[in-house]
Image 1 (cartoon, rainbow, N blue to C red):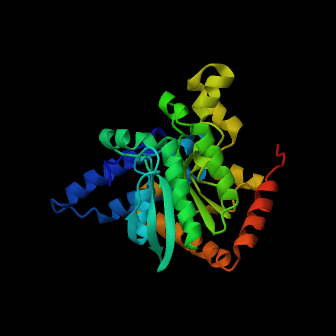
Image 2 (cartoon, helix red, strand yellow; image 1 turned 90 degrees about the horizontal axis):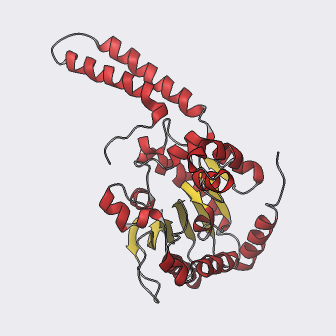
Image 3 (tube, rainbow, N blue to C red; image 1 turned 30 degrees about the horizontal axis):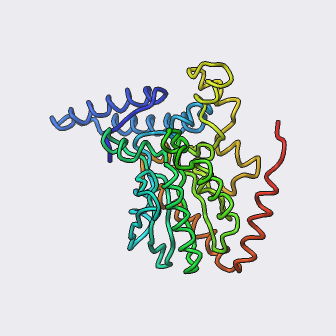
Length: 318
């Protein structure tokens, strides 16, 4: 686990936790202060529950980006066995911002694919901050087509600020790669379960998010653009991200009202970053439940239901 990092609105919790640490040090000197420590720990848990039950949309976006939040490889290690990573798009190269490969999910062979961010500077650069190039999306498509060929369910983990907007990416066909994934995923004759675990940013997210079931973590976000990007376009001021977040309504609680997602997955109190194992357990239970229904359907039935699902998403909500 990376070094503990706290968000601005968590500071009251941090102060109490420091007091608990001080009291624990005193207890080592023989002072009987167990009751005081227990009382403070109870206050911390209650305060944390209250704060995270009333997050603003901007605060939720910050939690979704938390550096200690579990990433795709964390979920793979906690939820799958026998993972074999597959590399490259057989055209240009291997994109480290998207990882994928064969694995077993409770013994069932599956194809797992997801965005991968980094925690320290070296890893962030290596993973390109979780922003894929076209070859990343082409790799993902190659793996999904392989899954269809061998009748393997596909499980994807979405966590990206968006597709990489560099000149090289555009020259190599970024828009075409994303569009092709949307088209091909829509007609893939194998079950697809999508998990939005952090940031679901624009087409960069959607390129691996066309599925039969779309699950979204409680404190994740899903939108056509980041709050800062939206603010830069609307008001020529990227610092107005908080205002833009309120307008975008990108939280799971907002998105489920639009029919875009199927289920909100509960996070541990304080966010997924506080307990990776508990978060993986909650998500695994939901994936298992949805896969059990999907594997009963034929390929044609999956495609028909997927088509109807996305057609039904068009609606207006105040």
